[in-house]
Image 1: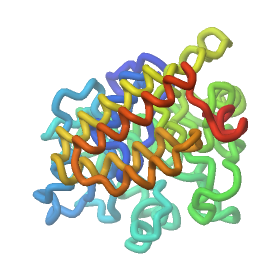
Image 2: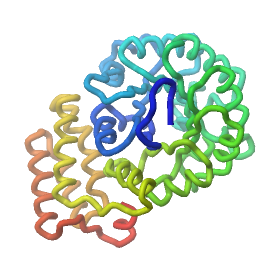
Image 3: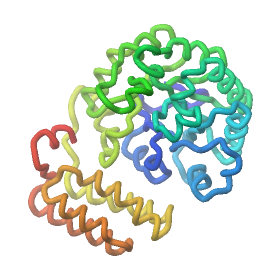
Image 4: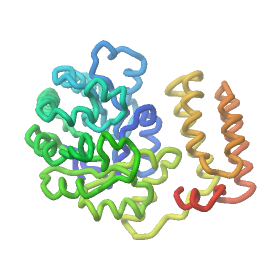
Length: 339
Protein backbone atom coordinates (compact mmCIF):
# COMPACT_ATOMS: atom_id res chain seq x y z
CA UNK A 1 0.00 0.00 0.00
CA UNK A 2 1.20 3.51 -0.82
CA UNK A 3 0.37 6.70 1.11
CA UNK A 4 1.52 9.58 -1.04
CA UNK A 5 5.24 9.00 -1.65
CA UNK A 6 5.49 6.41 1.13
CA UNK A 7 5.40 2.76 0.05
CA UNK A 8 4.53 0.70 3.13
CA UNK A 9 6.38 -2.58 3.69
CA UNK A 10 3.15 -4.47 4.39
CA UNK A 11 -0.58 -3.99 5.00
CA UNK A 12 -0.48 -3.43 8.77
CA UNK A 13 -1.04 -0.09 10.48
CA UNK A 14 -1.19 0.79 14.18
CA UNK A 15 -4.38 2.68 15.00
CA UNK A 16 -4.08 6.01 16.79
CA UNK A 17 -5.12 5.54 20.42
CA UNK A 18 -5.28 8.33 22.99
CA UNK A 19 -2.86 7.69 25.82
CA UNK A 20 -1.35 4.66 24.08
CA UNK A 21 0.32 5.38 20.73
CA UNK A 22 3.09 7.55 22.08
CA UNK A 23 6.54 7.40 20.49
CA UNK A 24 7.76 4.41 22.57
CA UNK A 25 4.70 2.34 21.64
CA UNK A 26 4.82 3.34 17.96
CA UNK A 27 8.47 2.41 17.75
CA UNK A 28 7.86 -0.92 19.45
CA UNK A 29 5.03 -1.85 17.08
CA UNK A 30 7.16 -0.92 14.07
CA UNK A 31 9.97 -3.12 15.35
CA UNK A 32 7.42 -5.89 15.72
CA UNK A 33 6.28 -5.65 12.11
CA UNK A 34 3.85 -2.75 11.68
CA UNK A 35 4.41 -0.74 8.51
CA UNK A 36 3.03 2.48 9.93
CA UNK A 37 1.87 3.83 13.28
CA UNK A 38 -0.32 6.90 13.71
CA UNK A 39 0.22 9.10 16.75
CA UNK A 40 -2.39 9.73 19.39
CA UNK A 41 -4.40 12.77 18.40
CA UNK A 42 -2.91 16.25 18.73
CA UNK A 43 -5.19 19.19 19.44
CA UNK A 44 -5.75 21.86 16.81
CA UNK A 45 -5.98 24.49 19.55
CA UNK A 46 -2.89 26.66 19.09
CA UNK A 47 -3.12 27.79 22.71
CA UNK A 48 -2.00 24.29 23.70
CA UNK A 49 0.91 23.96 21.26
CA UNK A 50 3.44 24.70 23.99
CA UNK A 51 2.01 22.29 26.55
CA UNK A 52 4.21 19.39 27.60
CA UNK A 53 1.58 16.91 26.44
CA UNK A 54 1.36 18.40 22.94
CA UNK A 55 5.14 18.67 22.65
CA UNK A 56 5.52 15.00 23.58
CA UNK A 57 2.90 13.98 21.05
CA UNK A 58 4.71 15.94 18.36
CA UNK A 59 8.07 14.36 19.25
CA UNK A 60 9.29 12.03 16.48
CA UNK A 61 12.99 11.99 17.34
CA UNK A 62 14.56 8.80 16.00
CA UNK A 63 11.22 7.40 14.84
CA UNK A 64 11.15 5.01 11.89
CA UNK A 65 9.50 6.56 8.85
CA UNK A 66 6.86 7.34 7.84
CA UNK A 67 5.99 9.63 10.73
CA UNK A 68 2.21 10.07 10.92
CA UNK A 69 0.44 12.52 13.22
CA UNK A 70 -3.28 12.66 13.86
CA UNK A 71 -4.92 16.04 14.42
CA UNK A 72 -8.34 16.68 15.92
CA UNK A 73 -10.65 19.67 15.89
CA UNK A 74 -13.69 21.21 14.25
CA UNK A 75 -12.49 24.55 12.87
CA UNK A 76 -11.06 24.35 9.33
CA UNK A 77 -8.58 27.22 9.83
CA UNK A 78 -7.31 25.80 13.13
CA UNK A 79 -7.00 22.33 11.64
CA UNK A 80 -5.02 23.75 8.74
CA UNK A 81 -2.67 25.51 11.15
CA UNK A 82 -2.29 22.32 13.21
CA UNK A 83 -1.30 20.45 10.05
CA UNK A 84 1.35 23.05 9.20
CA UNK A 85 2.63 23.07 12.79
CA UNK A 86 3.16 19.31 12.85
CA UNK A 87 4.70 19.13 9.39
CA UNK A 88 7.21 21.77 10.46
CA UNK A 89 8.13 19.45 13.34
CA UNK A 90 8.70 16.37 11.27
CA UNK A 91 5.30 14.86 10.45
CA UNK A 92 5.38 13.15 7.04
CA UNK A 93 1.70 12.20 7.01
CA UNK A 94 -1.17 14.15 8.56
CA UNK A 95 -4.19 12.12 9.66
CA UNK A 96 -7.53 13.78 10.43
CA UNK A 97 -9.57 12.38 13.30
CA UNK A 98 -13.24 11.96 12.44
CA UNK A 99 -13.52 8.59 14.15
CA UNK A 100 -13.06 9.11 17.89
CA UNK A 101 -16.33 8.35 19.73
CA UNK A 102 -15.26 9.79 23.10
CA UNK A 103 -17.82 12.19 24.57
CA UNK A 104 -15.23 14.83 25.51
CA UNK A 105 -14.22 14.96 21.84
CA UNK A 106 -17.68 14.68 20.30
CA UNK A 107 -19.18 17.24 22.68
CA UNK A 108 -17.08 19.92 20.98
CA UNK A 109 -18.17 18.66 17.55
CA UNK A 110 -14.83 16.99 16.82
CA UNK A 111 -13.98 13.35 16.17
CA UNK A 112 -16.85 11.25 14.85
CA UNK A 113 -19.38 13.98 15.74
CA UNK A 114 -18.23 15.74 12.57
CA UNK A 115 -19.91 13.02 10.51
CA UNK A 116 -23.23 14.74 11.28
CA UNK A 117 -22.13 17.81 9.30
CA UNK A 118 -20.95 16.80 5.85
CA UNK A 119 -20.43 20.36 4.55
CA UNK A 120 -18.11 21.02 7.51
CA UNK A 121 -16.31 17.74 6.81
CA UNK A 122 -15.64 18.94 3.28
CA UNK A 123 -14.34 22.32 4.44
CA UNK A 124 -11.98 20.75 6.98
CA UNK A 125 -10.59 18.29 4.46
CA UNK A 126 -10.00 20.98 1.85
CA UNK A 127 -8.39 23.33 4.38
CA UNK A 128 -5.96 20.72 5.72
CA UNK A 129 -4.97 19.35 2.30
CA UNK A 130 -4.46 22.89 1.06
CA UNK A 131 -2.31 23.79 4.07
CA UNK A 132 0.26 21.03 3.48
CA UNK A 133 0.31 20.47 -0.29
CA UNK A 134 3.55 18.48 -0.23
CA UNK A 135 2.46 16.06 2.53
CA UNK A 136 -0.19 13.33 2.18
CA UNK A 137 -3.29 13.78 4.32
CA UNK A 138 -5.29 10.75 5.45
CA UNK A 139 -8.68 10.52 7.16
CA UNK A 140 -10.07 8.17 9.80
CA UNK A 141 -13.85 7.85 10.18
CA UNK A 142 -16.55 5.54 11.42
CA UNK A 143 -19.33 4.15 9.24
CA UNK A 144 -21.60 6.99 10.35
CA UNK A 145 -23.18 8.75 13.30
CA UNK A 146 -25.61 5.94 14.11
CA UNK A 147 -27.04 2.91 12.35
CA UNK A 148 -29.74 4.98 10.66
CA UNK A 149 -27.19 7.49 9.41
CA UNK A 150 -24.31 5.57 7.85
CA UNK A 151 -22.70 8.04 5.47
CA UNK A 152 -19.24 6.62 4.85
CA UNK A 153 -19.87 6.50 1.09
CA UNK A 154 -20.69 10.20 0.97
CA UNK A 155 -17.67 11.03 3.12
CA UNK A 156 -15.52 9.00 0.68
CA UNK A 157 -16.60 11.29 -2.15
CA UNK A 158 -15.77 14.36 -0.06
CA UNK A 159 -12.38 12.87 0.75
CA UNK A 160 -11.56 12.06 -2.86
CA UNK A 161 -12.65 15.51 -4.00
CA UNK A 162 -10.45 17.19 -1.39
CA UNK A 163 -7.37 15.14 -2.27
CA UNK A 164 -7.22 12.82 0.75
CA UNK A 165 -4.52 10.16 0.20
CA UNK A 166 -6.14 7.26 2.10
CA UNK A 167 -9.26 6.57 4.17
CA UNK A 168 -9.43 4.38 7.29
CA UNK A 169 -12.86 3.17 8.42
CA UNK A 170 -13.78 1.68 11.79
CA UNK A 171 -16.66 -0.73 11.29
CA UNK A 172 -18.91 0.87 13.91
CA UNK A 173 -20.94 4.05 14.13
CA UNK A 174 -20.22 6.73 16.69
CA UNK A 175 -23.32 5.66 18.63
CA UNK A 176 -21.96 2.10 18.87
CA UNK A 177 -18.80 3.22 20.65
CA UNK A 178 -16.87 -0.04 21.05
CA UNK A 179 -19.89 -2.20 21.84
CA UNK A 180 -21.18 -5.05 19.75
CA UNK A 181 -19.30 -6.43 16.78
CA UNK A 182 -17.75 -4.41 13.99
CA UNK A 183 -19.43 -4.76 10.60
CA UNK A 184 -17.42 -4.83 7.40
CA UNK A 185 -20.14 -4.56 4.75
CA UNK A 186 -19.96 -0.76 4.79
CA UNK A 187 -16.18 -0.88 4.41
CA UNK A 188 -16.56 -3.26 1.45
CA UNK A 189 -19.11 -0.94 -0.16
CA UNK A 190 -16.76 2.03 0.22
CA UNK A 191 -13.81 0.08 -1.17
CA UNK A 192 -15.87 -0.94 -4.21
CA UNK A 193 -16.31 2.72 -5.14
CA UNK A 194 -13.00 4.15 -3.96
CA UNK A 195 -10.16 5.52 -6.05
CA UNK A 196 -7.93 5.91 -2.96
CA UNK A 197 -6.57 3.23 -0.58
CA UNK A 198 -9.04 2.01 2.06
CA UNK A 199 -7.96 0.73 5.48
CA UNK A 200 -10.28 -1.55 7.51
CA UNK A 201 -10.39 -1.19 11.29
CA UNK A 202 -12.32 -2.83 14.12
CA UNK A 203 -12.13 -6.13 16.02
CA UNK A 204 -9.03 -7.41 14.23
CA UNK A 205 -7.58 -9.55 17.01
CA UNK A 206 -5.81 -12.43 15.27
CA UNK A 207 -3.99 -13.34 12.06
CA UNK A 208 -7.02 -15.29 10.87
CA UNK A 209 -9.34 -12.34 11.49
CA UNK A 210 -7.00 -9.98 9.62
CA UNK A 211 -7.05 -12.25 6.58
CA UNK A 212 -10.81 -12.61 6.78
CA UNK A 213 -11.36 -8.84 6.96
CA UNK A 214 -9.02 -8.17 4.05
CA UNK A 215 -10.88 -10.76 1.96
CA UNK A 216 -14.37 -9.59 2.97
CA UNK A 217 -13.73 -5.90 2.42
CA UNK A 218 -11.13 -5.85 -0.32
CA UNK A 219 -9.31 -3.26 1.80
CA UNK A 220 -5.75 -2.31 1.01
CA UNK A 221 -4.64 -2.64 4.64
CA UNK A 222 -5.89 -3.27 8.16
CA UNK A 223 -5.54 -1.00 11.17
CA UNK A 224 -5.06 -2.63 14.56
CA UNK A 225 -5.58 -0.88 17.87
CA UNK A 226 -6.68 -2.51 21.11
CA UNK A 227 -5.44 -5.98 20.09
CA UNK A 228 -1.85 -4.64 20.11
CA UNK A 229 -2.06 -3.47 23.72
CA UNK A 230 0.23 -5.83 25.62
CA UNK A 231 0.74 -7.84 22.45
CA UNK A 232 2.75 -5.80 19.95
CA UNK A 233 4.03 -9.00 18.30
CA UNK A 234 0.58 -9.38 16.73
CA UNK A 235 1.94 -7.46 13.74
CA UNK A 236 4.65 -9.99 12.89
CA UNK A 237 2.15 -12.81 13.51
CA UNK A 238 -0.31 -11.32 11.02
CA UNK A 239 2.39 -10.48 8.49
CA UNK A 240 3.68 -14.06 8.60
CA UNK A 241 0.19 -15.56 8.34
CA UNK A 242 -0.77 -13.40 5.36
CA UNK A 243 2.45 -14.40 3.59
CA UNK A 244 2.44 -18.12 4.38
CA UNK A 245 -0.98 -19.16 5.66
CA UNK A 246 0.69 -20.53 8.78
CA UNK A 247 0.80 -19.25 12.33
CA UNK A 248 4.06 -18.37 13.99
CA UNK A 249 4.70 -20.13 17.30
CA UNK A 250 3.89 -17.88 20.28
CA UNK A 251 6.78 -15.86 21.71
CA UNK A 252 8.56 -17.49 24.61
CA UNK A 253 8.50 -16.00 28.09
CA UNK A 254 12.13 -14.92 27.78
CA UNK A 255 11.41 -12.87 24.66
CA UNK A 256 8.31 -11.26 26.13
CA UNK A 257 10.27 -10.41 29.26
CA UNK A 258 12.88 -8.66 27.12
CA UNK A 259 10.22 -6.80 25.11
CA UNK A 260 8.61 -5.51 28.31
CA UNK A 261 11.93 -4.34 29.73
CA UNK A 262 12.84 -2.50 26.53
CA UNK A 263 9.40 -0.89 26.44
CA UNK A 264 9.76 0.23 30.05
CA UNK A 265 13.20 1.71 29.36
CA UNK A 266 11.77 3.73 26.48
CA UNK A 267 8.84 4.94 28.59
CA UNK A 268 11.10 6.02 31.45
CA UNK A 269 13.45 7.87 29.07
CA UNK A 270 10.54 9.55 27.26
CA UNK A 271 8.44 10.60 30.26
CA UNK A 272 10.90 10.69 33.15
CA UNK A 273 10.72 8.80 36.45
CA UNK A 274 7.42 10.06 37.85
CA UNK A 275 5.24 9.93 34.73
CA UNK A 276 7.08 6.97 33.27
CA UNK A 277 6.24 4.71 36.20
CA UNK A 278 2.57 5.66 36.08
CA UNK A 279 2.18 5.30 32.33
CA UNK A 280 4.05 1.98 32.43
CA UNK A 281 1.46 0.53 34.82
CA UNK A 282 -1.23 0.14 32.17
CA UNK A 283 1.19 -1.43 29.70
CA UNK A 284 2.43 -3.93 32.31
CA UNK A 285 -1.20 -4.74 33.09
CA UNK A 286 -1.89 -5.42 29.40
CA UNK A 287 1.21 -7.59 29.03
CA UNK A 288 0.16 -9.75 31.98
CA UNK A 289 -3.63 -9.81 31.54
CA UNK A 290 -5.07 -13.27 32.04
CA UNK A 291 -1.81 -14.86 33.12
CA UNK A 292 -1.58 -17.21 36.08
CA UNK A 293 -0.90 -15.25 39.29
CA UNK A 294 -1.12 -11.93 37.44
CA UNK A 295 -3.90 -10.45 39.59
CA UNK A 296 -1.83 -10.35 42.75
CA UNK A 297 1.19 -9.13 40.77
CA UNK A 298 -0.68 -6.24 39.13
CA UNK A 299 -2.17 -5.10 42.42
CA UNK A 300 1.26 -5.00 44.06
CA UNK A 301 2.92 -3.46 41.02
CA UNK A 302 0.43 -0.58 40.95
CA UNK A 303 1.59 0.49 44.40
CA UNK A 304 5.24 0.88 43.34
CA UNK A 305 6.59 4.40 42.92
CA UNK A 306 10.07 4.02 41.37
CA UNK A 307 11.44 2.65 38.13
CA UNK A 308 13.82 0.42 40.07
CA UNK A 309 11.03 -1.22 42.05
CA UNK A 310 8.83 -1.56 38.99
CA UNK A 311 11.54 -3.25 36.93
CA UNK A 312 12.35 -5.51 39.88
CA UNK A 313 8.74 -6.62 40.14
CA UNK A 314 8.56 -7.30 36.39
CA UNK A 315 11.79 -9.31 36.53
CA UNK A 316 10.49 -11.41 39.41
CA UNK A 317 7.17 -12.10 37.70
CA UNK A 318 8.60 -13.17 34.34
CA UNK A 319 11.48 -15.11 35.91
CA UNK A 320 8.95 -17.12 37.91
CA UNK A 321 6.84 -17.64 34.77
CA UNK A 322 9.91 -18.85 32.85
CA UNK A 323 10.72 -21.39 35.54
CA UNK A 324 7.24 -22.85 35.15
CA UNK A 325 7.22 -23.01 31.32
CA UNK A 326 8.87 -21.61 28.21
CA UNK A 327 5.49 -20.15 27.28
CA UNK A 328 3.08 -17.95 29.17
CA UNK A 329 0.42 -19.81 31.13
CA UNK A 330 -3.10 -18.36 31.01
CA UNK A 331 -5.79 -18.87 33.61
CA UNK A 332 -8.20 -20.28 31.07
CA UNK A 333 -7.90 -21.66 27.56
CA UNK A 334 -9.96 -18.91 25.91
CA UNK A 335 -7.48 -16.27 27.07
CA UNK A 336 -4.60 -18.30 25.65
CA UNK A 337 -6.30 -18.73 22.29
CA UNK A 338 -7.01 -15.01 22.06
CA UNK A 339 -3.43 -14.03 22.91
